Length: 159
Image 1 (cartoon, one colour):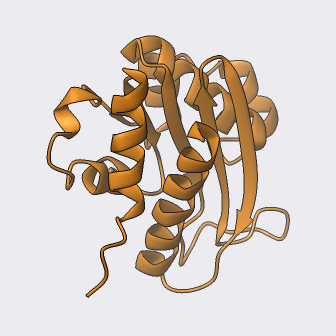
Image 2: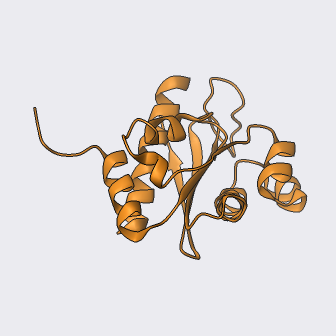
C-alpha cells in the first residue's frame, strides 16, 4: 500500500489551498469526472455543482456553448470543449472547470472524427487549455481513460 494520494485528492487539496471552486461539464463521460471528485472527503468545500450536457441543446442552454460553434465545428471539437469549460466556470462561479466532449463508441465515429476522439478543456483562473486525445478500447474504457486524462489536465493546470 502506498501513501501517495490519488489525483482527485491532490486536486481537492490544491483547490482548498487556493480557496477556489471547481466544476465539470461532461458529455461522453456522463458524470464520471464529478463522481470521481466526490469520492474525496471534504470535496464539498470546493465543489458545488456540475453539468452533464450530453445533448447539444443542453450544452447551449446550461453552459452557453454557442449554436454557431456546435453547427460549424460539431459537438466534438476543440472550440466546443473550450466553450464548455469557460461556460461551466461562469455558470458555477468557479475559478476552475474541466470539460470533456468526445466519441466513446462503439458507434458514432467517422473518418474525420473516429471513436476515441476526445477533447478536454480546462479553465483555470481565466486561462483555457484544450487537449486533443485519441483513446482506444471499449466504450467504458474510453470513458475511464477520458476521466483520468481530464483529472490529470486539471491538476496540471492547477500547479
